[in-house]
Amino acid sequence: MAVIPTNIHLVLVGDFDQLPSVGPGQVFRDLLESNCLPQVRLERIYRQDADSSLIPLAQRINKGDVDEDFIAPTPKTKYPKRIFVTTAARNVPARIGQLVDAYLGGHDLDIQDIQILTPLRRHRDLINSYLQDHLNPASLNQATYRLRSRELRVGDKVMQTTNDSDAEVYNGDIGIIKSIAGKDKHVVNGDRLAKKEKVHLKVTVDFAGHLVKYDDPTALANLELAYAMTIHKAQGSQAPVVIVTLLSEFFPTNPQAGSIIQRNLLYTAVTRSSRALVMVGDAPAFVRCSKTPVVDRPTSLKQRLKLVWQAAQQDPDSPADEKAQTPVQEEQPADHLTPAMVEDERVDPLIGMDGLSPADFA
Image (cartoon, rainbow, N blue to C red; front, top):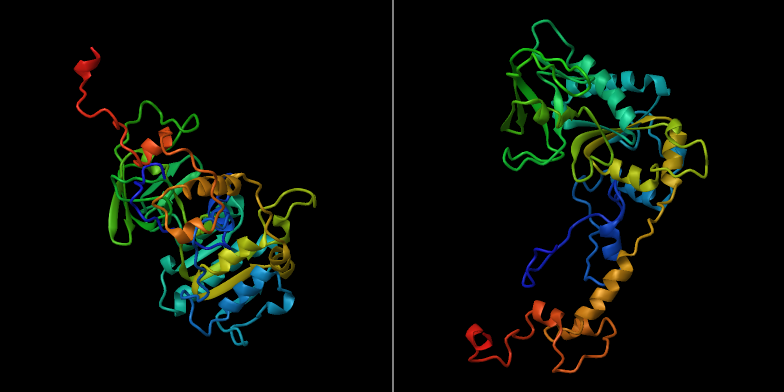
């Protein structure tokens, strides 16, 4: 924000009801709730068809108006674009594998069109490990790359986890490993490669037609399996088929303990789908999640925004209708020069010094 000139019109676009950042703060929500900035709420959803059952489901989740009767046990019910699959926790990976097989086998889809979402990283890793072996099993003739406990294979669905502007690939981009050239390398002593080994390895990933080559362990460490991802990571993305898994064991056993399993988590997950939604797990977990209100994060951003906004209303260039929205503090005398006035270019910093040069002060 500090590098944006004063003559730039900044437009922020987002979803008030989605998840805040993983780290501290809730910047977008605070910006809207401060009532300092002009804002427009869009009510129409374009990701799904007008008759999609996902839209009313998302709206009910936002209101906490969900009970176990929202579950559609088969695709032939009145909710043809969403189904619920009840399964025990230990069977979730295998059941998801069966669902993926069904969609890949008869719906003209590929693995890029199917995204599995789960709240927890450990559960994501469990599903990724299962689906890698299920969909892309290792073979003697298959090139692989191993880093710590992870193994990447040709054909794997992977995600870039950092921004690399030189390679034009960014955090959250998803692709398919097209080739691995070179010997398989292993890791000793944690992340350090054995000194005797000189790495000559190139991994090529196809990011929707953009081929990116990785040729060292540091760059390859930025790739991870992406058959499944966390719901937080899925924000801003969409897929024709979304499979969401929620289990009662995800909730903390201590009622007083904080939890990320709140209704905005489920809302974010179900709205990632553009065609079909599959919910896997136990119904009480989905109901409990939708009924758990969002815990507001305490920040001081709203108060600071209001103070800055009030100060901005003193600017004589501000539109009159903006000035009327917020009480204006008492103006400083016209001859009172402040650093802020110079920085905002409201006055010439050399006022009263016409005709002078540095030599006059020698």
